[in-house]
Length: 372
Image 1 (cartoon, rainbow, N blue to C red):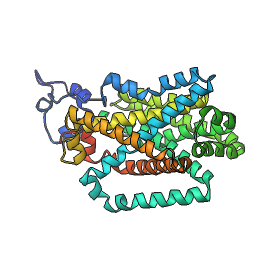
Image 2 (cartoon, rainbow, N blue to C red):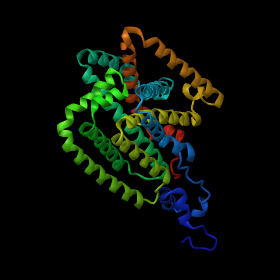
Image 3 (cartoon, one colour):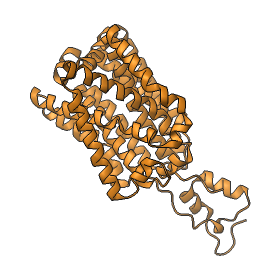
Image 4 (tube, one colour):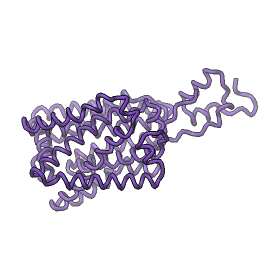
C-alpha cells in the first residue's frame, strides 16, 4: 500500500513515534508521508546527562558516607545535612497545591481539612506511642520514596509509549520488601542507629524492625524469590516492547542498585535513599515549573529564569527561618512536630499533584499525547 516510489518507510515512522501513534494514524487511513515529519519523542526528562546524574545521584552520596564511616562525627554531620535537605523539599508540594487554583478546586475539601486532621493525628499519636508514630513515619517515607521512583519510571514509560506500570509497581514493592526484610534479619540495628545519629522518631522506626527478626528470616527469601521472578518478567516485557528506551532501563537499574546498596551497607544506602529522593524531587519540580504556561500563581511566579531564581531564594529563606523558629522551643518537640506535619502533607498531597493522566501535568513533564 505504501510501497510506491519515494514513499517513506513506515518502520522509520514507528521508530520515531511509537506503535500507539502508528496505529492511530493508520487506523484513520492517513499515509505516513503526511506525518513522517513528526518530531522524535524526547525520551529524557531533563536531558541525557542531567537525567543520569539525578537517577544515580545516590551513588556518590553513598560512597562518601561509606568512606567516612569510621568517623562518627563526620557521619553524623553528613546525615544531618541529608535530613536537612529532606526537610527542605517537603513544603514544595504545599506551594504546588495552594498556589494553584485548579489544583485546589479539584480537591477543595481534602486540601481544606487535611492539615487539621494531620495535626490532630500527630499530636494524639505522639502522646499515645512514639513507637507507633516512628514506625508509621518510617514505613510511609520508605514507600513514598519508592513510589516517586515508580512515578519517574512511568514518566519515561509514557514518553517511550510503553504500558508496564502494572508490572513495575509490584516489582518495586518486592525490591523494597526484600531490602527491609534483609535489614531486619541480618543487620545490627542498634549499631546502625548509633552510626546514623538520627532523632528519636527515626530511631524508633528503625528499632521496631528488631521485633520482626524471627519472621523476617523466612520472609526474606520469599521476598527475594518474588522480586527475582518479577524482575525477569519485567525485563522480558521490556525487551519484547517495541518502545524499549535506554533512559528508562538505566533509571530502573539505578533504582535496583540503590536498594542493593541498602542491603550491602545500610548506613550508606539509607543516606543515599533519603538524599536522592529529595534531590530528584527538586529536579522534577524545577523541570515542571520551567515549562508550565498556565495562569496559576506558582506558574506565573516561575515563568522566567529570573523569577525562578527569586522564587527559589525566597523559598530557601522561608525554610531557614522555619528551622530557626522551631528548633529550640519545647526542647525540639516543635521541630519534630513540624517535620512530621510537613512530611505527612507532602506524601499525601503528592498523590494528587503528579497525576500523569492530567494533560497539564503530563505536558509540563514533556509527555505529549499521540496525535489523533
